[in-house]
Amino acid sequence: MPNLSIQPSLLAADIGRLADECRRAADAGADGLHLDIMDAHFVRNLSFGPEVVKLARRTVSLPLSVHLMMTEPQRYVEAFCAAGATVLQIHQEARCDVAAVLAAIRAQGARAGLTLNPETPAAAAFPWLDAGQVDEVLCMSVHPGFGGQAFLPHVIEKARVLRQRRPELDISIDGGIGPDNAPACAAAGVNIFIAGTTLFRAPDMAAAVAAMRAGIREAAAGAARSGS
Image (spheres, one colour):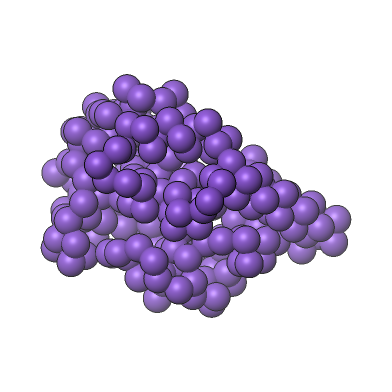
């Protein structure tokens, strides 16, 4: 299985101190940062643009995972890749030629990610996985559009199906992730954990990152030993 990674989500950060919050996450031991880009159309809310990605890239050297919650992500691939995205994730449910957009992301030098909403089955990603067009699949464990929602446990099985389909695939999960559910996700095959409120609102972010890392490592090791 690919390396385990913890990525704090800037959606839960102090919006007035984003550069400081990026540094705080890096100092706390995060493996990357996650940025949710909302267009007020695909989802109801409006969040960050390319300039915030540029700010994060100037501030820290961590990988940047940029999640386009956009109806027409094809219009913004070049801008977000140029801003510094390491991984650019589009939705399977978006209004676009998914294969063409994934190819455009790679052509810009970023890794291509495909996002599945909670109701979208793992099989929806199979055409692009089997064609080798996807570097990462993001499983949403809440409905996209705003933070602080409760984790949807049925998404765990989706990660298990994806891991069985592609053992080498990076599988990330986002939405309500915390110490109570991250180990179960790791046991199912998730290797990238995106957490906003759990980490940015913790009294000690470094301790929260360390505790989550210990939990997912133990669960992943246990799954490997059992062959599940």
